[in-house]
Length: 178
Image (cartoon, rainbow, N blue to C red):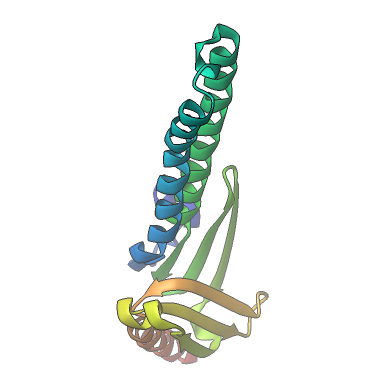
């Protein structure tokens, strides 16, 4: 599903930017997934060392295969659901509005929008060692609309994006000021 199908653009509206979370923020969950996926190999190794005759019983072998399969499927589901949330969280910036699309769960989505001329204040924030090195951070928008605050987390180049949104908001305010 494309962003245009979700936001239903107006006839005069053009999409300028689609922003997603920075790719480097997916590395820690991926590392956790690799660690969790390797755990059954370690457990199998330990069981064969500590209880060498345990694996020779067909009943125990079937039970271990069953639990191992459930565990591996659970770990894969964890990775899949996190990836869906990571990939489908996006912010669409058009010449008229900013649309925040947040994937809440596997089957849940929240869509909020604000007209650019309603933006009152934008703050970009880069906190920490890795965000400073890889240049990602948080942008907070104060608005005069129904949703008073928009928070864009882990966006790449937050200072550049803040300037881009300010420029677009300034153009939209000039357009609505006429």
